[in-house]
Amino acid sequence: MFWLTVQKGAFDAGREFNVEILWNGPASETDFSRQIQIVDSMVAQHVDGIAIAAAERKALVTSVERATAANIPVTVFDSGLDSTQYISYVATDNVEAGRLAARTLIELLGGKGKVGVVMHAPGSASTMDRERGFTEAMAAEGPDIQIVATQYGMSDRSKARAAAENILTAHPDLNGMFASSEPSSIGASLAIQGRELKDKVILVAFDASDTMVEDLRSGAIDAMIVQDAHRMGYEAVKTIVDKLNGKTPPRRLDLRAVRVTAKDLGEPEVKRLLNLQ
Image 1 (spheres, rainbow, N blue to C red):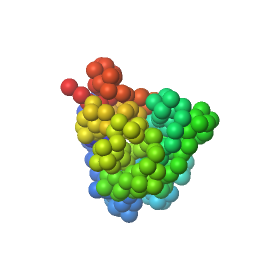
Image 2: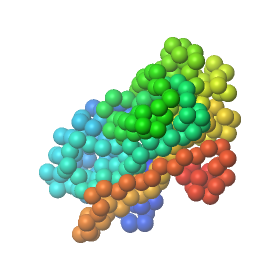
Image 3: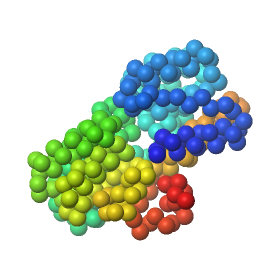
């Protein structure tokens, strides 16, 4: 759902500003080599601009800098890059979003307990920032809560489920869990439901999908930290258009994440964020 909503935002901007959007990406978020091929192909076509969500903060540097050298403006969105050769960075403030997740879990746990974390994948700047914000806020604001285990879901819901299963097996007294991405969240929810632990283990998830919304309704997920994916796609395109029109887009545009619980699902802003009818 996240990437489909980002795509809708990008295409909405394309229609508004009368630019053609060429949308492409690897089948897997961990397929760095395929993303490099896609970017290099766009540079070879000499497109007018590129907006990229880098799957890995180092792997895409050369390709992005090649685009810049070819005078193709690049906006980085969603996940950061170890380069300064871009015109704008459009993303959720992921460190603060991680802190919001920690504060939510602290509140739901009543300030004490044991928690596990199902992380996303090594090298993904956005999720690493979320995980760092979560860990920092948990240490500072939840001194009676212990993070007892962390494992990667590798951007795959089956692997994330296995990671969550491992944590639950090793720590049968676990009270809570944080998952830092959509696939990690779905995998963690499946593991908790499979063990009939939704009334025992509190799950704070990140991002949203139709499945996750249903899990929120059923109580398998207790809260979601949701990004404004539509605006992210829209603003990524708008920064390129502004640059092409001689304007100076903001160097950085931080978007705010929102906490959503089941009781919030009827709120107009939440329905917009989750694309609910």
